[in-house]
Amino acid sequence: MSSDLALPRYTFFDQAFSQHYTQAGQGDVLLLIHGSLCDYRYWRWQIPALSQGCTVVAPSLRGFWPEALATEDASFSIAQHTRDMHTLIRAISPDRPVHILGHSRGAQVALELACQAPELTRSLILADPGFRVDDEAETASFHAKAVALLEQGEVDKALADFVDGVNGPGTWRQMVGWFKAMVKDNAYTLLSQVREINLGIRLERTAGLQCPVLLIGGANSPARYGSRLDILEQAIVQARRATIPLASHGMNLANPKAFNQTVADFLAQT
Image (cartoon, rainbow, N blue to C red; front, side, top):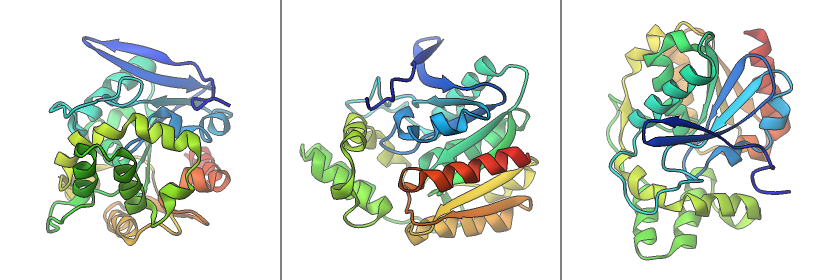
């Protein structure tokens, strides 16, 4: 099996930018937004399962594979990726709002998108968001060590440090070949992403969300992700919460059956 599941790659051209994505299924659109070091291949176990009930659209964000950055790029940002997703939704679903699911860094893009364009958002799913809330103190991040290793040419060490930091010690060593290949393809996005370390969200903006919201966490995810879900659960009145058993931050890969069922059930109820 190929690393992209042999799914068709579509390209939407927006001025000088080519938005690459894959698509499967029929019906209402579910937009899947990946996190750090990933691309649409990250959703390899979600696309076939969830496309049984809807149209799944999974883009690779600007700067990621198949046109991955090799150097730092000042245009790489949550704001730019949010604008790109806004444009993509307008192109693929001009007449109907879409379901939006974001994982990790992608959850911040998803939340920004829902807050900025509620008319495009039918429901919102946030899986293990890691962003800082504006009134919290800024903190040091493991991103910096990974970036330093990348700049020294220690790609494998950098990626092991980052992946273990978000999932738990020893995760990189246990990862399968296709996942390591994907992450290596996107390694140098960290040179740009490091500038976002303490980029926060204004929590009061979430009070304006009117769409159904699902918060998903991995049962074994590092505590910082659970703390984000705690804060969002308190701030968003209509939010529901689910925990994926036997899984850490990469919950959709570690326990895809439970993850897919949780998402499908939520979509069916909305």
